[in-house]
Length: 404
Image (cartoon, rainbow, N blue to C red):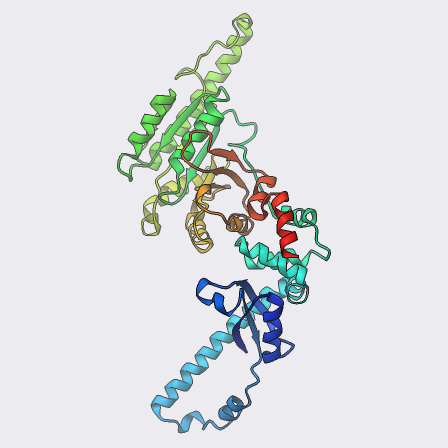
């Protein structure tokens, strides 16, 4: 088998060139816009695999002597060649499995120009290639914008509810890598879903790794008039959570009794320490891969409290798709329930967001862009995520006219 790239101004033309050289059974592996350095060869690059038909190489291979009669150097070269062929075979088997999963999609992209344009549009948005194949495999010509959005919407999962429905106190933890923007995201949540909604808020932070991180959060809390406690160990966090939830339960029962006795006074409790906390937000340190062992106890605590702590994995939308997958695997020990994307203003391709959500089978909760509090925070919705990946419907119609 042979993998080879072909360049042409259209995907269809590149595929025709490939099949002319590799035969009609050649399979399309990937297609993308050519890089700047190769743009002079053609606007698109397609990678195709197929059987080589070089008679000279066949004759040369048949004239090889038995391995036992080769010199040590030649024998090592043959062994390396055998290893390379074995690795190539394994790659081809994985590729065949991937193509089998999306069989009609791959065939459609190869033979249907309209599906090819849709596939290119999805991969330009950096949607995972397998997902793109699966999606185009469910479409048929003529393709409308409504049908495309409808099929893509089936992959979208969103959940912008904080905490657990029915719980007296909503407890939310934000975890994620350094520089993801957890602290500013937490403050935005405190303002928009706490103070603006007339809810009482308590902040806990375990971020004692970053210099002045706790002081920064304390300053925000002082400005907003909400409580903020710095907890240096997971055990201290567990104790603080148990204490505040237990106290809040007592306060709420007391409120009910007092409300029954003094209904004419309305709400007897004012915001402050004496009032139950409606929203509890937990900030955590951002640790790189080599430091993950330091947070094993914290991860274990949040993972075991997944029934009352709503953990969001905070990730920069500007991060490369491969890095998003790597970091999400790294933070899987926290058992996050949702994905919270920040730095939305630093990228123009949002396919990796949807791809990661599908891969992890976890909904997207919020989007954050910029530093304004709380204006630059928005709850994730299906339509918003579709607009990010495909563009607004009006823009998509313009794209179709140009592509046609």
